[in-house]
Image (cartoon, rainbow, N blue to C red; front, top):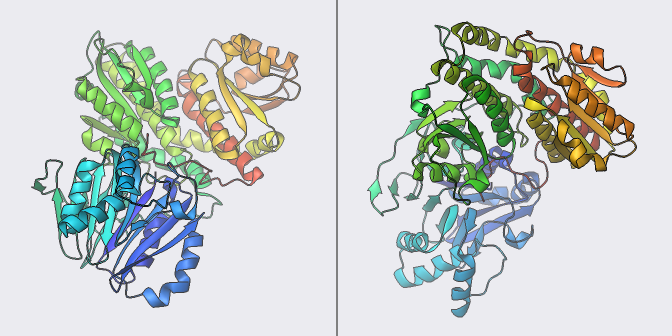
Length: 611
C-alpha cells in the first residue's frame, strides 16, 4: 500500500523524490515524508495528509538543499500506529533512516528484546525495530551493508524497505513479497515501489525477486538472493506514459477512467482476438482437464469479477468453478483433489492476499493463470501463465476499467474453454467473437446516459442506507455496485441476490429506503419483478436499471433508467459488462455530490500489499 522511493547520485534528490511520490499517490496514504543526507547528517521533512502539505514544507527549505544527492521518501498508509507525525516515515535511529512497506510480523518480539537493551521507542510503528536493529548492528560490525543483511535475516513478514546511513552515499533495499524495483539512470540510481512511478526518470528497470536485497550507489548496484548469493537480474526497458497523470479535462481520474473504457477496452479485446477470429487464450497452458474444476481467487472488486466468471465458465464449458476470497484461501486448508488449476485476478499484480493464495495453489500443485493489468508484476512473474487486460494505468483507487476488462477476459476464457471442450458450437464461438468486438461502441451508448445517472445520484445522495439487488449473473453486480458506493460516498450500502431479499434483508426496508436493481431479460426476470413489488409494498423507493423489454413490463416503478438493448442472443450474457457502467456512474456522482475524495477515498489503497 505505502509508496517507497530512494534516489542516490542525482542533485536536488528531494525534489525528484517528491515527484515520484506524486506518482505513487494512487496507492493510498495518510502521511508522507522525506529523509536526506546533508554534510553527514540525516534530516527529515514530514507531513500529515496529502503530498501538498509535504511539498509546502519542502519549498521552504528548497534553496538550502538543492545540492542534496541522496534521499528516501515514503507515503504511509497506517497499519501499526495512528496517523501521527511521529509515526510518519522515514523512521530514524541515530545515524539510520528507514522507509518501509508491509508488516514486520515479529516486531513485538524484537521490540521486547530491544527494550531489554535500553532502546527507547518513539513511535508505535512496527517499522521502528528496523532502524534500531541497524544501529545496534552498526556498532558491532561498522559495516552498513552487513548490518542491513543481519536485519533482513532477523525480521519476518511481508515487507519492502529502504535504508540510508549518515556516513554512506548508498541505499540498501530489501523485499519479501511486497514489490520493489530499481531504476537505472545516467549517473544515478533509483528505487521505487513500481516502475510506472519512476518511468519519467529512467529507461531501464530491474525488478527484485522475492527475497532479494541490494545495495546501490550513484553508479553501481549489487543484488543478492535469499540465499545470500550475488545474482544478476534482467534489465527491462520501459517507456514513460505521458498521460499517467493527465485528467484530460475531467474533474477526477475516476471520471476519466470511466469514460475512457470504450477506447481502452479495444486494447483488451484486440489482445484477445487473433486475426483468424480465434481467441488468444490457451486452455492447455491453464491446465484445463476433463473432470477437473477451476478455482478462481481474487479480492475486492476482482472477487466480484470472479463471481461473474463462475457463471460464464460453468454455463459455456460445463466445468465446475470454485470462487475463493484470496485472504481466506491459504488459511483454510482447501481440498484440491478435484481441481487442476487456479485463476488469480489482480489489477496491480501486487495484491498480497492474491499473491499468497497463488503461492499456496502452486504448493498444492495447481497450475496458475493470472489475469492482471501489469506485466512484470509479482503475480505475473510467478504465475505459470498470464493474460493481460492492457487498459493502461488506473489512478483512481476504485476500480473501473480494470473491472470491465477483467470481465471481458473471464468471458473470453469461458468461451475458449467451451470450444476447447466441445461444449459450444463453432458457430456460437464465432458469433461471440463478432459480438465481442461490438462491446466498446455499445459502452459508449451507455455512457451517453450520464445525465440520467446524475439525476439518480441527486435522489439518493442524502441517504444513510441503500440496497442493491440483482439476480443470477447480475447478483455480483449488486455486490459491486454497493461496494463502489460505500467506497466513494461512505454511504452504508449492501448488495443482495434478489431472491434472498425475503430471507432476511427485507427487514431493512422502510419508508423511502433506496433500492437499486440491475435487471436483464434472461428468462427469470419475472421473479425479480416480484421482488421489486415486495420492496415497494414496504415503502422502498426502487430505482430500476434495465432494458426495454423489462421496462415495458414494469409500469408500477417510476424511477427507471433504460439501457439500450444489445444483440438479443448475447444481451444477457454481456449484461454484467454493460451494467458495470451504471454501477460506476452512480457511485461517482453520489460521491461528487457529497464532496468526498473520489480518487483517493479515506482509508483505502490502490495496491493492497499488506494482509
